[in-house]
Length: 93
Image (tube, rainbow, N blue to C red):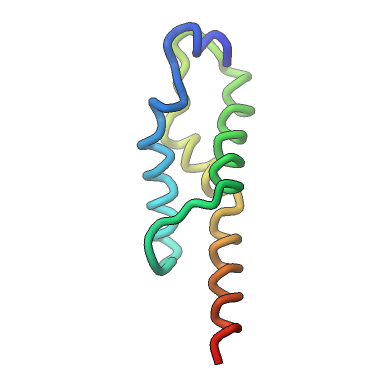
C-alpha cells in the first residue's frame, strides 16, 4: 500500500482494531484464559488485510474495522486455539 503509506498510514494505527477483532472472536467462541495471539495467526491476519488493501491503495486509504474482522475470522486463530485446547484436555488423566 505505497500510496497509503505515503499519505501517512501505518499499520500501528490499526493495532487497536486488530486487538479488538481477536478479543471479539475469542469471546464469541468462549475460549478460556487470557487472550493470546499466536504469531502465525497475527501475521496471517495482517497479510490478509494487506493483500486485500493493495487493490484499493490510495493516499487516504485506511483498512476499516470490518476488514480486520474478516481477516481475523479467516486467519486460523479459532482453529489453532481449539486444537490447542483439545490437545491439552487429552493430556489430562
